[in-house]
Image 1 (spheres, rainbow, N blue to C red):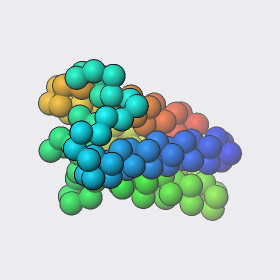
Image 2: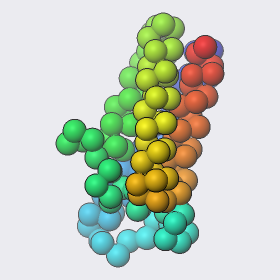
Image 3: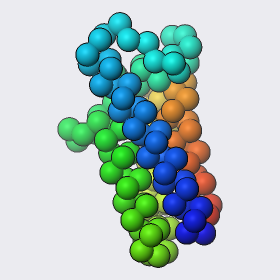
Image 4: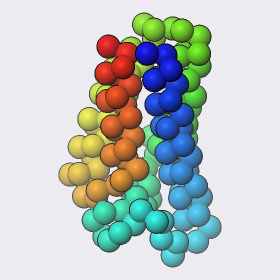
Length: 127
């Protein structure tokens, strides 16, 4: 269980880092198109630059990096109960973010959906 949590947290951290790199490239070049921007609907950039791309003054990618480092630390320390409740919170947040992504931003973000899957898998392995 802990090895799976470590692997999933590293994948989540990598995805969050990639989202952060897209965010920074867009800030420096507004014409930048990420590799995951396939069209107007299937786009990673669209939710990142939307008004929903940050939460409480922190971008979602930075919040994701902080979260997955926290998950990694919890797994390394063997804190099973905290891992479970963090995964529950992540799944709840994923449901809210998925609603915002599909109905407010009206996009299909491959990075976002991958992160939702990672959060679901984190809950499953820590159940």
